[in-house]
Length: 394
Image 1 (cartoon, one colour):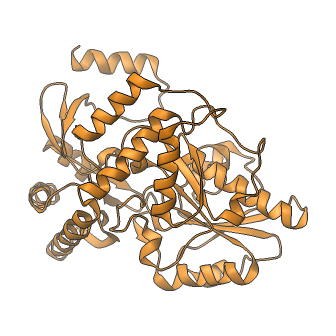
Image 2: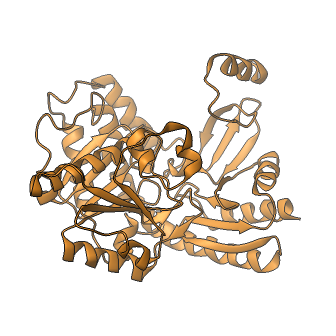
């Protein structure tokens, strides 16, 4: 079908919640996407940090195809081998104890909130517990996830949201301390803020919050939906800080394209949820968990983390050089292959020029270009990206 006909059909039938680029992607290979007219694009978006293994990975594709031929869905009334394997691998990789599989990152946040509230309820029987979240955060668009998202523009039209949510300033320990009281049951934040502008947690902030949580019996919930699964150079970003959360949420690259998320918890916290407390029809089905299990295998076999460390450092160096060269660049921030450039010029214009030149970039708030490419990119790919980006910044 011709590109304009596909776009017209989509616009005629879809609710208009996205301002899409006038592009129809047809297929991908490695770190490149190809549109319906055959144009090649170097992808530094990876489906918003999802396609960590790049496009058309044979082992991944073969595993998904084989599972489709076996069984796709049975519901959570029964067990499956892919679910058992995926759970074991996620537990091992996270350093936590128990997993609940969801269909998305938003649902993982919903589950984490419910778990925290149930855990607190079992301790004192109260139903008025509070959660401290962060300003400029993003955790999803369902009502619970929206309630802990510290950005009014996402919330304004959808009130009232769930009560008992207070917002501190990210990396500001005093602002967190000021909100803590005897009703506080959890402190929730992204280990690296993504949509908020690519801000990593400082070492002092995350370690001191962990200490406060331990002292006061408060749960620490870390959102690793975007920054997890190897993106920062460790399987999960918190592992570089020497802390372990009580609950962690992940998604995006967990399934590398198959919709799947999870919340993972310490054993003593996880046992708060019992049969009837939480559920999902599709979550943890054999297809999704086969994807998860295969992703962990490929990460190990192809030394993905080593590539992230090496190429992530190179990307950081090249972006620093670019920031020094161009007055239009205010600052570089990030970890590994999750980087951001804050600009003094409209970021949308730069992203559009890059797209026209065959480079896929995305933005984040505070006028930031967000770089979240497939984790298999090479230094040569970085060099090509920098050449195009410089042309767009001229």
